[in-house]
Length: 167
Image (cartoon, rainbow, N blue to C red):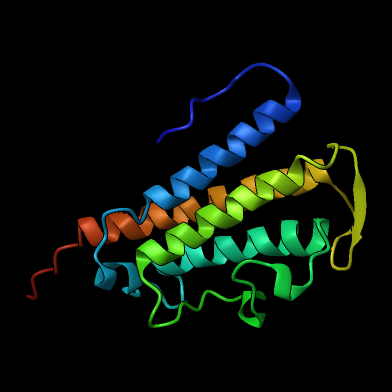
């Protein structure tokens, strides 16, 4: 399903629409890949199509479930200490599993976000005082950046650069 682009209206509607569209764009970079392709390392880091989505699910949990809702780790769906800045995906996790995890975390983030006004603030240890507006915009930035990474990885998978002839 493709979320319709909203370009005019209340600020919150536009921000939440942009975030949902970036969530969808990130998932689209990996849809249809085989398990092997989703895990294929094409760059020096652990950044793979599946790991970027796993990382995004962790960002959803960290910011919305742990920070804004103040849920204990045990109350967070899928939370583990691995969430803290990693792109690691367990061998048993399929691409479909990771996409579903991200979609569940995103749905829960929407529920949590609805409890707060855009101007509500809390203190985040690494950032200082942050508003819900800032958090939503930070997630837009995060997911747009990673969707761009995913686009490049997908291009490399779909259209590998031919080897240059040797002379």
